[in-house]
Each structure stands twice: as C-alpha cells, then as structure tokens.
Length: 277
Image (cartoon, rainbow, N blue to C red):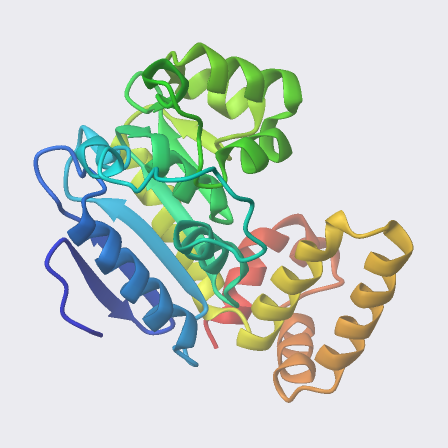
C-alpha cells in the first residue's frame, strides 16, 4: 500500500483497514482529501481485496467536515453553471459506494459535513450510543451539503428525516441514527462496536471473493425498475454457479451439516466454518 500523511492502511488477507489520523479533529483538509482520493483509487484497483474498514485514530472524531477556510477560497466569478461532469468529491464518494469491495465505516465519535457524506456513501456504518454524533453543518453557515448529502441522506433515511438533519444543523444521536437507517447498528461502547466490525469484516474477507463482489453488485441494482433488478440478479447468480469457488463452498456446507436439523439450528456459525476452510 502507498504512503500517506493523514491516514494509514493495513492489510489482513483480503481485508484492508484504513485509519484516519489528521489531528486535532480529522478535518478534511487538502492533505486528508488528497490522501482519501489516492487511497480510494488504490483500494478500488486492488484485485485481491474484498472488504475495507474505515476507522479513526481519534476517539472523539471519525471525520469532521470539509475545511471551511478552503471553501472560502473556491472561485465565485461569473454565474453558477450546472456541469454534466461529476465533481471530484462526488467521484470520491461514488468510488467508496461502487467499488467491488465492501466498505464499512466505524464511526466511534463525531462525523460531520463532508465526513458524513463520505460515510453515507459506504456500504455499512456502525456507531456508539452516547458518543457517535452526525451533523450536517452546511446550511447554518450559508451553503448546503454539496458532497452527495442532499441525494444520499434521503435515500438512507427518507425525505422528511433528511430535511430535519440538513436544515436543522443539529446533532443526530446514535440511537436515532440507527432507528432512521443512517447507522446499521449502535453499540454500548467502542469495544463492542470494534468487536462486531472485526467479526463481520473477517467473515466477509473469508467468504468466496466472487460471491461477495457479485452480491454487492446485485444489491446495487435495487434502484432500477424491479424487473431489471431481477434480471440482473438472475444473471449474476448464473455467473456464480460457473465459478470454481461456488460448488466447493456448497459441498463443504453440506459436509459440515448443512440441511440437517442440527446444522441449520446453528447456520450462522456453520457459515463461518465454511469460510474457515
């Protein structure tokens, strides 16, 4: 993995862990932004990875917003124009969403503005009760969430709730964020969150690579008309049947007790044993 000044990347088989470290609040400075862009491209292009976990070295901040001092330098000459091209920050968010790796945000502390938009672009988000806070601080300072937030948040939590988060500029606590769909789960403490993410990401890492990638691709078709999504699902299922890993994993599932009363009563653990081969 490449060398970065505001984050580090560790590999563990097909899992990569990205630790963000840009004191004092993990503000998205030009340096952190540049590192995130380069890292996202490196991770996307790695042929061997299946899951990427993002976490913070700072227990109080997962990632703060984009540097407001930098926003104040953005050019404003002439009239605003609508571009047909995706801007660079949108492209970063889309890489995190669409890469053929599972992306997971471990939000142990605060996340705001562009940091929240990056998190919302990932496949899963986990937080800590009483500690994780989400804040879209753009409207109070005269702008709007311009890094996918006005489009991503309604898709996660619904239009009315997104309006409250975006227009209110107030903290969204972890319990509410879990109930509204921003967080997959909220845990009692950071250790419990870390243990869950480690277990989940380890399972994904060890499952057949093709199945993980094509399952994500199929789920990402949910916004297409249902018939198109079903056609894509059927096609991807057929592709997986033709891989070497599928019959091998199915046979091991049966050998370990799949399709028996005892085996199916503990199928979650049994699935992990299939991956332990």
